[in-house]
Length: 172
Image (cartoon, rainbow, N blue to C red; front, side):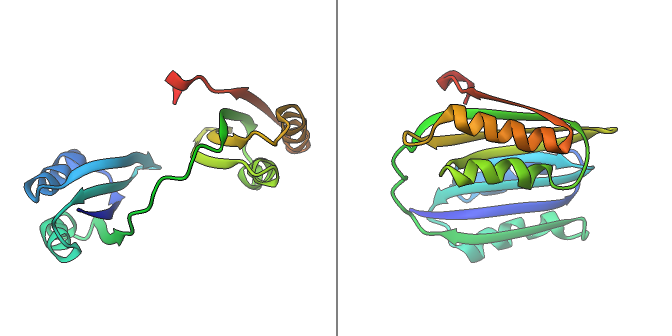
């Protein structure tokens, strides 16, 4: 079996997910990982699927999705690798406050500095309120208290609030 990454980006409309996944299922492909969201009225989806179809066949099956120019679809083969062993403990970071440039880079730099690996990150802007939620794995060698203090210091310097907490397995 071969793994393929499929991305679909463009103007949102009803049925994108249904049409894409139906065409992939018709090729006998199994969806193994996916993320889908709206970004300011634009649809963004990344799928990792497994099966015996090659990239050319997948591209041909998905070509009608972008026929009107409103969506861009890409397909690429993903090398199969053994999953990395768990890094340690899962954590959730929430940041909220007035929007300004540099919030994401400022707080995630602190996570990276201690060897944390971000596994999911989303942001939303509602009027002037900015919200960031990140899930990450923290190596056992990292000090969560020191990381919390560093993140709070960065957040405070930007005029936003930050909360760091250990994640429960059923939350992820």
